[in-house]
Length: 270
Image (tube, rainbow, N blue to C red; front, side):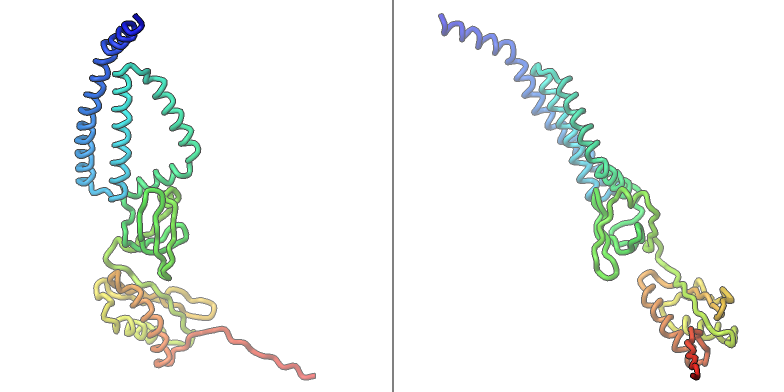
């Protein structure tokens, strides 16, 4: 008799829950295939948009986990598990994690904005947050710069996305701006000719737009000349340093004085 009771109970379980379990298994298998095809289509759409690799991977993982959670909830509901309370627990856990990781979430949001709007890309030379350097990596939470003296700077994306960003690599050309001061005894016309001669002597200086030299200020002890020379992006620093060094040499050759502070010693007779 006892054996028959257990058999009857087992049969009742099979009759009541068997179809639900089979349906849940079928939903899990079919749902898994659907999730796979949805992710494949989502990845193709991101490729067409030209999103960054790190952003594509993160969004793909995020969407994948979201679809799998929905599939799990559907399977549990099919078996007869109450999913309302389960979803409430997930929501509460998500809220608690979000409050604990506010800074990280801000950096995450900043990383998404950077990758979508692309104010800079890997290889660009930028200036932001008091730092300047070549963009080495763009990650979800941080951006890495390589400074001219080969130091790595890691910048949080939250602050970076809300700051002013100067991108020196956006345009193919760049202007070299320099100011030279000469003494008041110097001839203005001659000084301009000397500076222009130095500028035009470098083959990397572009003819269009044409270089320019103008008196920018009559300072306390010098006449200041503001110089402008356009070059290709990759020639900027070479021309910059060349103009400084060669202009000093040209001033010396032309007898043009560069004012500097003089120290006068006063000897007291006693």
